[in-house]
Image (cartoon, rainbow, N blue to C red; front, side, top):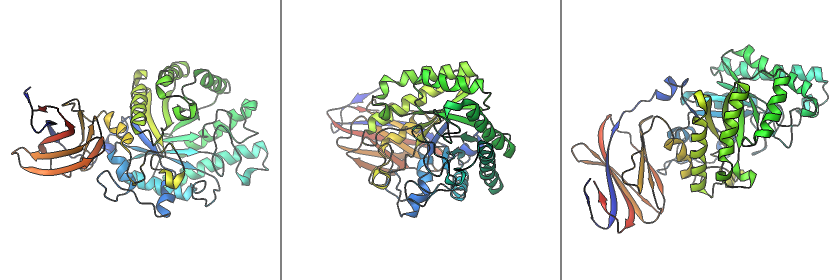
Length: 430
């Protein structure tokens, strides 16, 4: 490798082949590692006039932006009779069906997350829908079955059969309190099985998920799934949440616990596992990026391919609209560089680390996207793309950022990329 100084700026030249394969995600969906986004807010964000922009500053469909960042699946929550509140409402059956259809048209798979409530259900609250509040336990069993079946049957008739269905959301303490609380496991087990039976009655290919929080806590997860086993609860996948932010520690202190727990869940219960919720502070971009990369790597490392994927919870839920700290979007309407973690770890991409100050990820899918990461955001970064004859065909400049994305829209062929770090006193690398 020849090294010499030119203009005091580090430059790197690489060669890559671009193969535009628009059907890659849709045609190879079954074996694909899931890189998902929970986008329950998207419909109402659009309804309030929120505009989304890709990394080049061009207004775009949020789903296109997510797809170009490696997202191949969406997760949609459904509430029974939700309000019209901007943040705490919507997510009705009809809204979920409409969004699922949009996602399918983009080649994405769909997960449906049943909360069995009119609004948020989580470890701190599992409130019954108002319409079910006075029902007996026997009636609640019928409610769960009918609601689950109705939503999924409507989806299937509309042309979308979800790949996965969650029966309950973060139900470490049970659901439909007090009847389905973990203080009465016999009743909780029956409710969960009603949801499973309804999902399978709609389509036997649907995989059913049971979901708990704090996926790094093995004792907590064993407590829940040991009881589920005793009650004969039927499910296919263990779904876990992992939020270092809410644990009050950096991910580096708990990431190995997450890996240990996932491996234990697989071996102890004979199930597959998926991190169905993850997120990091949107102001800590590099840390969130590093955390996502680490989580994806740990899930992929689960033995025998039993680690199915990772889903970011509401990456598009920008703070000024949602008030949510753990989104993955900037005030400029663009995704933050943390979202590039889904590209950096995508098995279909190749990383070109030449030189170490620049990392480039060519994404040949859906028209082509070139993601470039710089070791430092300082200075001005120029990226130039040449054809094989040396003719400059694309150039993009970034100032004060450590990442950028270039929409390629190139014909299949061989191309050269030249990028500089903007850092003085470095060497040219050819």
